[in-house]
Amino acid sequence: MQTSTQIKLLLFLLTLCTFNRVVDAQTIPFEITDGSPVVFTSVSVIPMDSERVIPDQDVVIVSGLITEIAPTGMVTIPANAEIIDASGLFLMPGLVDMHTHLGAEVAITGGTGINQMQVYLAGGVTTILNQGDFIAPFGNGLISLGQRIRNGELAGPTLYTASYARGPSDGGAPQQIVETELDGRDHVIGSKAAGYNYIKIYNATPLQAYEGIIDQARIENMAIMGHFPSPVGSAKALADGMAMVSHAEAYFYSHYHFAQDPTLTLSAINQTLNSRASVNTTLYILETIAAIWGGNTAAFNAFLAKPQMQYVHPAEIQVWRNGFEGSRWSPPGSQPGALDSRFAFVKQYTKDFHYAGIRLIAGTDSPTVLGAPGFSTHEEMRVLAQLGLSRFEILTITTRNAADFIAETIPAALPFGTIEVGKRADILLLNANPLVDLRNAQNAVGVMARGNWYSRANLDSRLEAIAAQYAAMTPVPQPPSSGGGGGSAGLALFFLLCLGLRCRYAGSTGQRS
Image 1 (cartoon, rainbow, N blue to C red):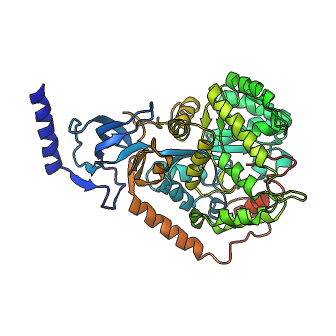
Image 2 (image 1 turned 90 degrees about the vertical axis):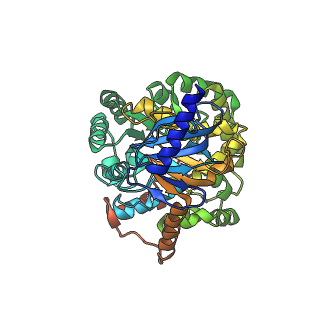
């Protein structure tokens, strides 16, 4: 047995010398995007299948998948593999953001903009779910953008998409508006044909249209997510099989009916558990809105002063400014601090949901609603820690839970979310253990998405280029007077939705995107 081990080790060393290039990931910046196999050696693996760290492992990546994990020196090294010496480093699954809105940049470019995708990647986010477009669906470019990323043409996280189904009073592109049962059915059929993964219902989706959506979605095997439409209510939406509630906060409006009444929590838990629905957290955005509410200029300026805001499109920031200066976050009669108790109550019942067995999934509502791509996920983790959850529980919410949800709702999708053989190679290589301190997840030596490796230096150079591009954008791009598709017309609709009356966080409804 000992002789066999020695032979394997000798063969391993010979392989390094003859066929492969050894790279010290801690000192040498580089990227690997040509499809070459990659082997991380001598790394401590945080598999996220349970709370554990496995030291001194080699991890082999071939064709975008994890193909072998074994103690150092015990794996078979593929020919022409890149060898990354990861001694003293930690390897964990990439992070997720399962509630994004790719807003201004996508509207300006008609869906071809890629800056935001690179910012997500730089933040360690390797999977996102875009929960509704702010330009006309069915050919707006998001589907092709996601495909180009999956094909390796562009750097970015794996992109899943949901198609908005809004009521007339919600506003939106004409293709997003549903009124009748037939509208609902046609919307599901069209969304699936366009390549969307999910349907997202909204605040005022009419009951007749909703019924058509629910029935046709079952026929098409498409899962439903979203808000609780006021004509439907939370109990019916959950009973009808809603797969994911887009905000933990949504229960406050539809189930608690704005009452901070903890006696209603048990029924919310039971309805959600019976439906097997997952819940998007989106707590960081609620924290931010509570802080800036009522014209709290100091809090808003502090938010804009965060370093990551240099990577947010100036048009997006202008949307935030208009919302802060207008009725969205400073409605008449509002006072700073008025939402603090609401935020505390939502955090409490979200914690109760978690410990009752409801699956929480990290989402941030960024970047359209107050947040920088990628960086917001780390802010979400910080707020989740305020609930008293363990670091492992928080990392599960930001990795494996989303992967389980995708596996259940898109069975053909490649598995991801843990460091295991057969999983998609979405990986963070870290300087320190995030199970000791969550902030260590921000300190990545590099990020791998679908087997493509980007060093920290590589990612930082991308961020610097994006920041320089945005800094040069003066004045901020403004929308033309009308439109509904991509390019300048798409930006016009984006501004109409997000600056006007259709996309506000108001005291009367409290609901968001």
